[in-house]
Length: 414
Image (cartoon, rainbow, N blue to C red):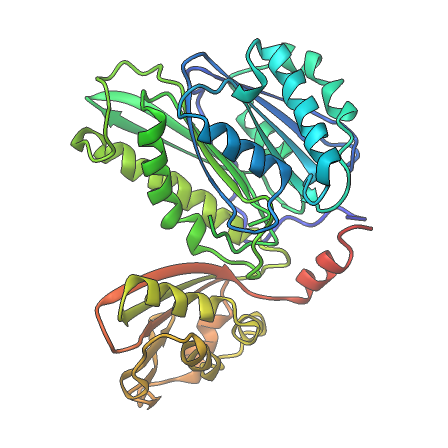
């Protein structure tokens, strides 16, 4: 980008206070590969015995780091010792040279941490199709390893940003066997957001003692209700990654299955952290001025409810109407109709901001355009739709579509 973007008006007031997670240390540095005057490289180090799970993009053109992490996870759940993330270059569609650059970075990080290169997870985000200069990263790693610190979570969140206008973090404390465990997460994402596990990266760490196969089940559920329920622009990145690390430092009893009732509080808190990070990504949608919650009920199945909600969320006509504070509810009806899922036109009901808009195939007699317009003038917009064919529901979060989105993406590489 040619200029620093203004902070999103939807941003939280402050970065959360994130306490250390036992067994996790972080450090950041500026490589100068794309950005000037800011850190763009993150190294996270984990103590021995740390387990890991990951969810990745469904794109058929995945980045080299996505392929790398998938390959390491396939070789068996368990040991990981480091995570290395660079911002500004996605190392995607870079062929054999991209693979070699990644391997050089992994080997250099492994040397500093004292592990095998397969125990180093890699993340990259930024421009697609540009070769990654590994030397800009490998040369910084000795100094980076020396400054690893357990309290560098905000610095880590800042370093992985691309077009993000604020650093994203979330944290929670859960109980397992009455023992407190911490959950810290950071994420980046602003555009190219429609995850199918958006450019989106998220990394969550806990001191809980949970094996990798169980972590995977917990992470998959958390992603389904959070990162897979957001959209900024309907585009799925080559680099989407969500990873969960568990250092095993907490002194609770052994966990062997995801359904263990002792994990109930942990599951709820993990879901909350993932949901918080996902919604922050939407609040930082490129050019966004309004945060939109879309709840679809009365659907034939959860899948149908989600598809209808995403049809509304991804409609340029709906998003631009909201940007213009225009109570044009006909566009919502249009988006329901085009979703390709069962809906009863003559039973359809729409509410905006909790206010009646349409029902039984026409405008609701109680509809007041002035009241709905007043709601549209706020920065938090809610849309509720009942499609009248079943009992399933889904909630999706998105943002409006403004000229700012065009400005950012027309100028992204210059």
